[in-house]
Image (cartoon, rainbow, N blue to C red):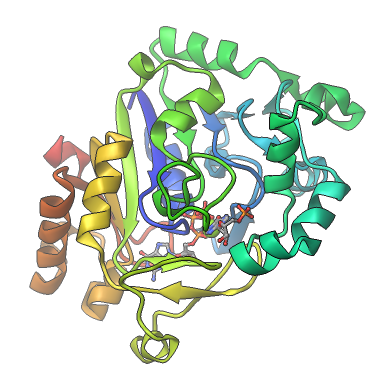
Length: 337
Ligand code: GTP
Ligand code: IMP
Ligand code: MG
């Protein structure tokens, strides 16, 4: 496996949670670290009959032997973090970089009360943006200033670089998606940080030369939550008719739904330096593909869609997801890489 970065190719919620859980269980990385923005993200994974919506700890927790880390670039809400650690019983194997910015109550209040943020941009109200703003102002508290986090503090770059130098597998998790990157997305309708693969490397403290594979996750029908341009959007009624309506993991808001956007996929794959892509929701292209676990059993409609994605992005589709369950997946890395 070596060093993998997994990021979202559209507007977030592409199904990174499930893809990450699959990589964690199949490749058994010794270290799994979360980069990305903060608890504005919700990664969903359905595993052993339970559904998890993770906001702070790496989704790779499903692989029980992995060390779990949160990189310095991420802003941490100690309450969300401690709740997940408690509920998932992760205390013995999770670490937070001592330099992480901290989200406080005042950030959440501002995120919810500020009209520009809550109404015009349509933020998640999790305080992530205001905490990043305080960080840029150099007035934010850091993880090392919070007594409740003391026993989790670590130096994430040291741990990860050591694992890489020892030839171990490392899995790095991005959050959100390309279209809401502060730099490359549909500004000002974006999140408070870049969301590309280079940013994830930076978040956890590894140089670009240490990355082996960049997996960009695309969903067959992209979705967007919050305001902002979405050129392939379809009316909600049509999405309902197609049975592809979705609701946000963090906010519960209905997600806007659109059709495949090949042009955006190509640009996103380029800026991320994709070496592979993962495609989720093939069951929505053709219900006959639902829960299919072998490539040869996919319908020709499903296979044609995969070929189109490879042509648009210029990289192989190595993972195909055919339903929300972790088992509903085809891993083609052995054949295509
Ligand atoms: P962010 O980091 O917040 O961007 O989230 P994410 O990329 O992890 O995605 P999220 O879990 O928010 O949303 C993806 C949704 O699609 C979840 O409800 C998944 O259970 C579901 N899902 C994932 N793969 C598939 C699939 O192949 N088919 C279908 N029908 N649903 C899927
Ligand atoms: P913020 O990141 O909470 O500041 O929200 C800024 C914009 O990014 C809003 O349009 C949000 O809906 C969107 N956003 C933030 N996090 C996610 C996510 O995890 N999935 C999808 N959209 C997100
Ligand atoms: Mg999500």
